[in-house]
Image 1 (cartoon, rainbow, N blue to C red):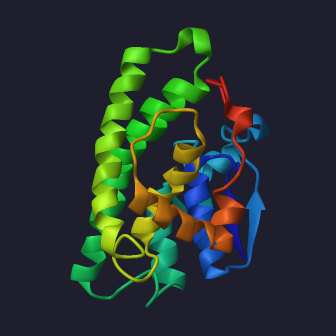
Image 2 (tube, one colour; image 1 turned 60 degrees about the vertical axis):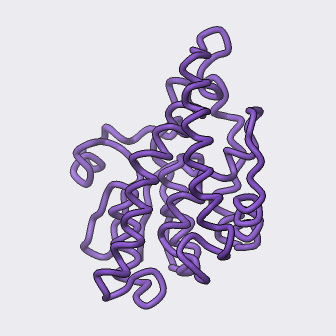
Length: 215
């Protein structure tokens, strides 16, 4: 059986669990990281020498790093739905996955969510937070244009591109932050909310993380 290590409030774990849910894979979830600890245990480090979640074991395969896990699960269990044999089609998905990881996630999760929500109020660096919010506005403007004429990022079907970028939406729209008008992104978000796997694995209250830099 597939095993997944990580705490449910972890952003990167949520991406993996969302796909596990979409694929309806039988699995065992093992709490790890944060208050659960366990990341410095020898058995865990033998799976991931970086001591971070998520990590999965699928029979004899051990995979770490969220996007590597998504690609693995897509190829192993989601062929024809989340994995194409056409390199050109895969490249379209890969481009948006990489953009999510190198642009959107650092600016939103690192700059806004960490800088604003996870940092104690008296320690917040407001110039840095405002700069990250401005960058996020530009990122979401790109998504706004992309989903203005289609239900999902790359067309009519949910893809790994939606999972990597869409995991940000719950926190983005729940935070007490200024946001530009994004009608197409909001419609995309509402479509994702209709998916049971998104509601179960992404729409998880995160109040426990407020002001927590050590979690």
